[in-house]
Length: 321
Ligand SMILES: [Zn+2]
Image (cartoon, rainbow, N blue to C red; front, side, top):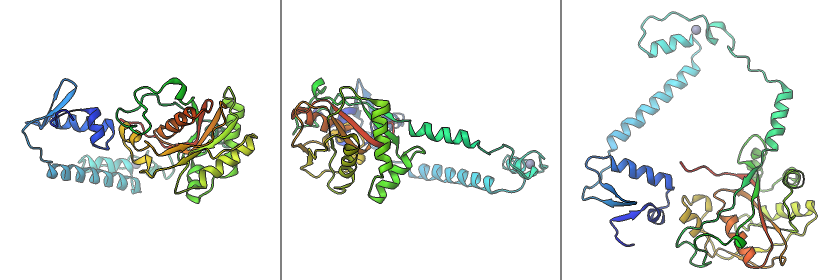
């Protein structure tokens, strides 16, 4: 820390486990206070002598207003009398007459909500083939991998290949089944089939993977390996339990920015037995920031494996805003 009163956003990410976008928002809010407790100096932020006090009264007031608006909307939805009358009263019209056009006045829905079952089936099939690309990470956070020694841009030969994720967590394609299965403790054979079909019929990575391994977990030690083993059987490839967890860490999904996502993985995994020079499928259940797959892919290739193709059942990532 060069000067504790002046920090770049990147060094704030190290100091606080907050998303990059959140840090930017907070700084923006603070800098328009008058007088402001922080000011921008080039690319760095500097504290001023102004102490900052949170305006709790204003926060309470605004929150109360939002709750009230939300309750109004609920009342509108529950209201069985004329919808337009409800709206006009809300806008201080003291003597509204029923409109004769809304669903309450007509006694039936205004819009036809029946769905053509053929269309619904086609939509379902579309969603079940709506896998997404996992884009491998390249640039690691500075000062995060003190143990593994990864710095700056990962060399090409340690980077993962483009991967695939079958669904979004909880979506109407496979995502719902992934979520339910995860809570029940076993991923179904239907998901094995869905991933195998995706790999063999649509993705077709080239050169083709020759073996399968997976991301280990200490708490659900059978869930992902069991799935990866069945997927390997289905693909006719050997499954090797090649990655082990050698250090406890915090749940990766609680890490809010790149520094913490990287730091939380430093020294956590060790690779034991890769097939020399052979391309491999690296299986995980849920992919969030993608750093876990990135780090294990680098370790596998460092230990002599061939190309690494990451693959996951569902994505839970929320884009930073
Ligand atoms: Zn009406």
